[in-house]
Length: 417
Ligand SMILES: Cc1cc2nc3c(=O)[nH]c(=O)nc-3n(C[C@H](O)[C@H](O)[C@H](O)COP(=O)(O)OP(=O)(O)OC[C@H]3O[C@@H](n4cnc5c(N)ncnc54)[C@H](O)[C@@H]3O)c2cc1C
Image (cartoon, rainbow, N blue to C red):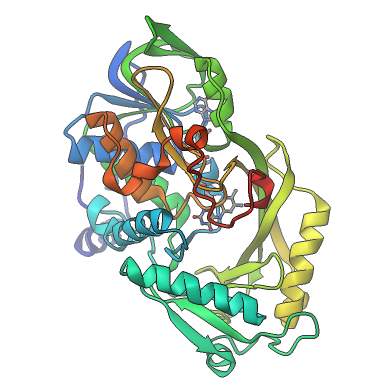
């Protein structure tokens, strides 16, 4: 793999950028592998990279039915943070944030990691108290956070209407190490680094069946033929239930759509990620100047990668309440991605009822920030057969045993998490 560097960029600029080669090999599938990973999203790619680098397992194929980066890994709003409440989640997402902090060096790829801070606004005493509890839990796990009063919030985000008639702003909860990472660069960075270590990235290869022999997984049927494997990993996000059905078991999750929006570009206006506590609206400003924002899921089961107008209206009205000036901006694009929403809102990284078949899924609407640690714990599970200490609570058995990780306390209602 050619090393990317400032010097290389300078040298290429002098010769018209004609010397760059393809970033990764577009491999044809071989008949058999040690490990087959289904799904070339962030988690599949990160798992392959960790298998190759941490565990020395390079006889690995990633089978992607479309093109790398066109799934949720390239559809999300790019936010990373570790401001979780439950210790099991907090520990995991903090480990992931630490991996983001060295991601670009690890894979030698510029992913525009920007720790610009994530600010959660609060609008009532009860909300402030909940954030105080969350802050304490975070500090116990060594994560940073700060409480801001209304004046400090206004210094950070002067454009908001803090005295709006619906939910006046009382203060904010800030994690300065949170921020954004350019999402498609994450897919490309992992793909390039994994491919350089021998991993086959096979695009346009849809898995249509799962081979089982004597209770064990033996490979997969695909649109490009049968591929045998000693171990198989499902990392297909919103399509997890489909793949599980092919292997003969069911998962405690539902698939829902989540929408996102981007406006026309404007001059620098907002240099943190901001979440409104009075409605479903969060926003950041991209490097190109567009405001990137979103809200909650559409609330019903679907595999359609587009959303419905009532949610568009809800998100836009919440945004306009908080930042009245955004009403003058034009929304350029809107899109959706299908989320694998679990019954407790926490992920599943687990062995399955089929021996040597593993699942990485259930990321709900928060799995982008989890990609580095998700790949790390999935690779550990596949390589050693044991859960990684950081992901030990994400096994499927927690649903049977009643030890759910219900971050929000919303109960078994996937749309409510
Ligand atoms: C609008 C939106 C905003 C979001 N914002 C954030 C955010 O700000 N922060 C955050 O942390 N998270 C966010 N998320 C969630 C996050 O994007 C996902 O949880 C995460 O990307 C899912 O993991 P993945 O990257 O591996 O999934 P994907 O990129 O979806 O990868 C799964 C892949 O599996 C492939 N596949 C499916 N079936 C098959 C098959 N049969 N054969 C072969 N391949 C198959 C798909 O084509 C896909 O490429 C957001 C999601 C959306 C939709």
